[in-house]
Image (tube, rainbow, N blue to C red; front, side):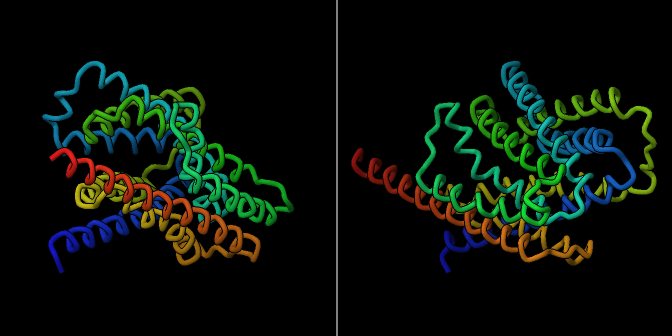
Length: 305
């Protein structure tokens, strides 16, 4: 096996680990929210994660310019709102799998919301959306064609994440990843702390009962996941991880079944399968587009020489 092939295999294995850690984060968060409120949990998670990020490369974080800090802080507010909606949905939901597949629709909504930012959606995105819509309808069918409040919040969170992704690409594209993540998480933690003070201050918090879930959420599902993602992205060509990343909702569904004894009816299972097919269609298109872009760049380089 060549060094390049070995490096790509390692990158793909790391990305599989990233998706598994992300899926475990759902379980950690759901367990934590059984005893503490969403804003309280997120304020702790974001702030602790920000400190760990800064500890990774403190010199890079401290070198950030005022414009970089401002852009990262503003983007972090959007991240804070998106994650708050997700946490509220997670607290209300009676299962993890359906929520994870609804959130995964953000991968399809990213190019659609990107139209407002001047980006162009590829043809496979529209095909994938057409495939995904019946999947969403099937998930609604399990409740008599009525979206449960948690499902509605998951969809809103997916839309907000798509907006965050595009805003982040516009404002923070040239900011080092560790610096960007530190200031965004710091901003999100402040936003969640303010929301906690406004709406949850009188709520009883039983942190002593779930501190281990909060710790696992910070260290494994946030810091280690981010570290492995950066490592994988530095080893794999652009676009090649798109298919692997679609595994996250699958892992979440499996964890929900094995660890939380969730049961999926035929409508829910079929809807999840249809959405997964849509994600694969979109991801395969992303991989093809990335390969074509690399060929164009390579041809241009050869021609220039």
